[in-house]
Amino acid sequence: MSNDKELKDLVQQKYTEIALQSKDDNAASCCGATSCSTEVYNIMSDDYTQLDGYNADADLGLGCGLPTQFAKIKQGDVVIDLGSGAGNDAFIARAETGETGKVIGIDFTPAMIEKARVNAEKLNFHNVEFRLGDIEHMPVSANMANVIVSNCVLNLVPNKRAVFQDMFRVLKPGGHFSISDIVLQGDLPAEIQQAAEMYAGCVAGAIQKEDYLMMILQSGFQQVTIQKEKVINIPHDILSKYLSTEQITTFEKSGTGIYSITVYAEKPTTCTDPNCAC
Image 1 (cartoon, rainbow, N blue to C red):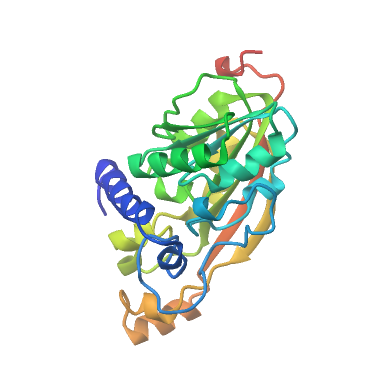
Image 2: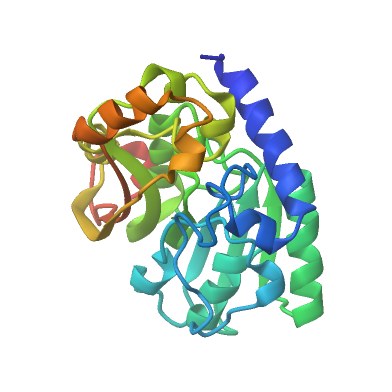
């Protein structure tokens, strides 16, 4: 496919478009990145509307789970939201951490940062801020966060290992993360893997579930737990853009599974890694 820079440029372009379009357009697509389905349901995201802190203006329908629901956020915690978009998960996290805590959203799309900041100002939130930056190299100091959340973002990053390593850096010893993401069991057809549109739509950038979990362990995390898992079924009208009818039948019989998982892991309270600052 493309190199890392080209993939990042693609994602930034697509998510700039998403920031400027309606939630209804986003909800009819794969992670909002394409207007690729005529099906009248959201392919990946869960319903946020009943959670404390929910704000409709911040919900672009881009997620694939509810990581904040599982993140064990406590009053006063410092929370980082990776790929914060228009602020949806950040505002949910703020409802958990309260006035005494702080939430930092990080996104590398300027249009998303602008949209999130406008939403925060409307809500008069003074302990939520949004920083422009790459989540492989977060614009935050080491050992400063209690909790990290992220919703359907790491699958868009070419170098996922670098993200996990930087998550380890910025979490305090004993801190933890809860992230929702897309993973695979089995191989996608080459036509989908090579489709830039499907990469921006969260599917082609997904990796094998076992590789994903191993990266977390190899980055130094412990207590790795899958908190929730659900099957993602890609509608025929999306698949037909890339595969023939015969190829779709073969793919559906192949046993390849596309899953949304919500994963929890902890940074050790003591360790020899210099990033622990123990």
